[in-house]
Image (cartoon, rainbow, N blue to C red; front, top):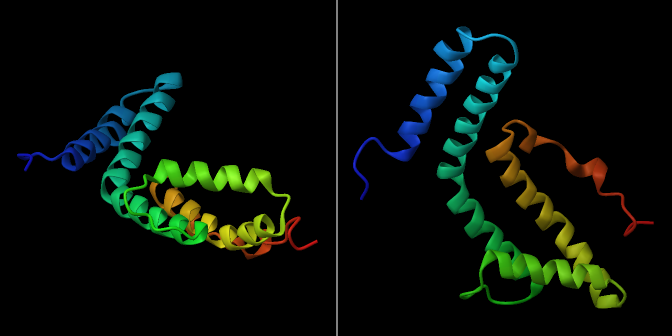
Length: 135
C-alpha cells in the first residue's frame, strides 16, 4: 500500500495550484499552458479513478462481441482482433460482427470520454447509428 499522499491526492493538489494561484498569476501564452497543465492533472486524476474499471468492462464487452472468453487475453489483444475482423468485413459473419460491435464500441467510447472530457460521455449517439450498415 502506498503511503499518503496518494497519486490522486498529489494530482489534485497540483491541479488546484495550477488552476488557482498559478493561472491567476500568469498571462499570455504561459496562461494557456498552465490551464492545459491543470487540465492534464484532472484527466490523470480521473484516469487513476476510472480506468481500471473501464478496462475491465471493455475487456468483458469485447470478449462477448468476439464470442470468446476473455480469460487471460489483454484488452490490447481483443482490440486488435476486433479491428482485424472488422477491416476484413466481406463475409456475412463480419457484417453481423459489425452490428454487434457498434453499441459496444459506443459504450467503450463513453467510458473514455468520462475520463478525458466529462459531460461529453452523455452525448446521444442515437443519431450516429445510421451508417453504411443501415443503408
